[in-house]
Image 1: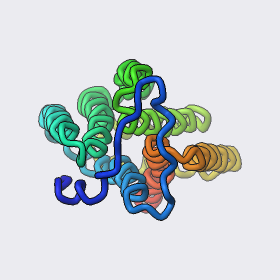
Image 2 (image 1 turned 180 degrees about the vertical axis):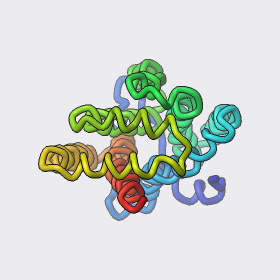
Image 3 (image 1 turned 180 degrees about the horizontal axis):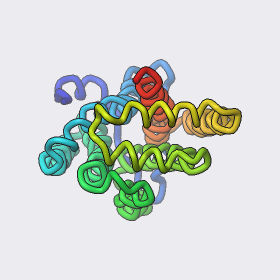
Length: 242
């Protein structure tokens, strides 16, 4: 997925600060290629793999789960080298999202009430890592992804989309079109539109606030948060065109 030579050119200046100063990274230059590559990679890892994982977990959930080991292995190998440490850090954070997604969407997808708890399976480890000053980029990426997931789930609850979620997950994909159309009608009410605006505004404010902190781990967090807007928009578009 990633090539070491590509990482070497873009991550050679990255180094981890001490545990006591884990959020006091050097302020990245906005014109620095590394900074934007990190932001772009974080956005990519939230928005693109989900469309690959979605069909995979339906057909081969166990394979999707086992692939987590591959992401962890690759992340640890990249972290062994200073020039690729940053990207291994990010990939380890991504592995938590992949692992949780494999479990939920592979076997438990018909029950939305446990979606967020499953997605948060890596939360204690991420918080522990941040407390210890380890894996700051990956852990903040995972927290940003989890934050976006939490807000999206809250939107589903507020707009009463949970029943449609259950129905879609209990039927074959070709039979889900009428359910998706009913869900879109539910979203296109004044209540649904108002909360959609609140959702996008909240994600936008938090994402921009993270960028303004001027620290590389927070850029990874921001990439995960802001790309949630893209993922939600694409799913809405797919449902609207169904």
